[in-house]
Length: 125
Image (cartoon, rainbow, N blue to C red):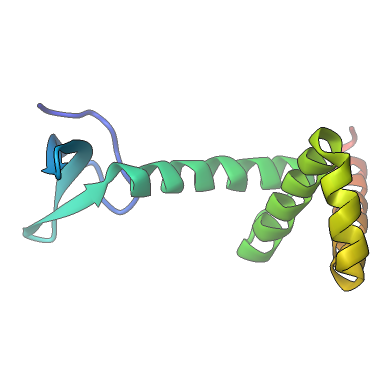
């Protein structure tokens, strides 16, 4: 079956899909033709790359630009914030057990808030 998707690194060249069967389980798998050879792209890897693109765009919209360090901090901030809202007792326990981790998260939250405010000022929002 032919797929019309463009995984990162594939350049949209001759993408074909199939399923790989292992121990009775089926896994979607893509192949693309790059530099004279067929390369396999696992769908899980493709999802990671697509999600990374989402995180990169979110970081850019939130902070004004995106790099690996900022993406990692935004990921930690978003996940910590979500866990704190959905399971506050877990976060309280973690904060008590790892006070240095709590301080690190507080620094990240403060940095993201500052970068976001600066970005909003710079863009006139």
